[in-house]
Amino acid sequence: MLQYMMDEIGSVSFQLGNRDHVVWLGDPSKSYSVKSAYKVLTEDSNSGNQLPFKKLWIKFVPLKVTIFGWQAFQNRIPSKENLCKRGIVENSAINCVWDCGKVETTSHILFECTNAYKVWMELCRWLGVNSVMHNDCIVHFNAFTEVMQGRKGTESGLRTIWLACIGCIWKARNMKIFQDKIISVTTIAEDSKLLSWNWLRVKSRSFNYAISEWITSPTVCLESVR
Image (cartoon, rainbow, N blue to C red; front, side):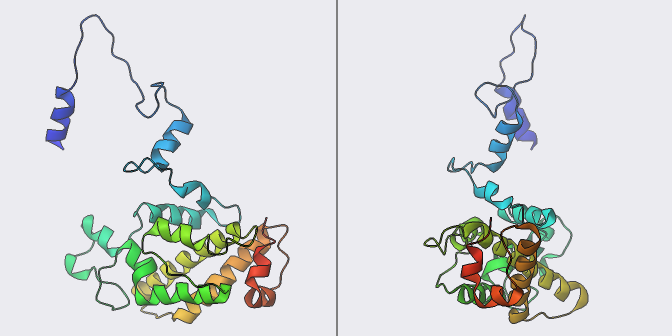
C-alpha cells in the first residue's frame, strides 16, 4: 500500500499558481453525482458491462434479503473463506459446514456444494424446467431468472424465488454452525417455495393464489406477478 501511494504521488505534476481542487474521476465531467457513483459501484471494471444489480431491488423481497444478495454478488458475505481472510477463523476451519471437504466460498455454499446444488435442481423440477446452473453468482442469477423465457411476466417472480433460496440455504448453513442442526435439502427447497409465496402474497396486488396452487402450478402463478 505504501508503494502504491508513492506511485500515485509520483504521477502528480504540481503547478505553481494553481489552486488545488477535488475532482470526481467516476464521470467525464469530473463532478460527483449519485448516479455516477452508482454506475461505478455496479459496473464490471474488467469488461465495462453493467452488472445486474438493478434486478436485485425487487419490491416483493425484504430489504435485508436483497442486501444479502448484493453482498453475494460481490463475494462479501461472511463465508468461511472470507472470514479467514480477515483473521476471524483459522485456515484449518474453512471447510464447508456440510462436510463435503471443500472450502466454503460464496459460490460453493450457495451453488456448488452437493446440498445446495440439489436444492436448485429441486426448484427447477418444481418449475418444470431443465437447466444446468453455473457456479458464478451473477451468471447463476441471470440463468435462473431466464429459465422461463417463453412465459411473459415471470422474471420478477423468479428473482423473488432466487433470493428466497439463497436466503434459506444461508439460514440452513448458520443453523448447522450455531445450533448443530441439519436441515434437509427437501426442507430448504420447501422453505424457499413457502417464503417466496408469502412475499408475493403480501406485496403483489395481482398475486392472489393459495399456497396449494403455488406448489402445484407455479408457472401459472408466476405470470400474475406485477
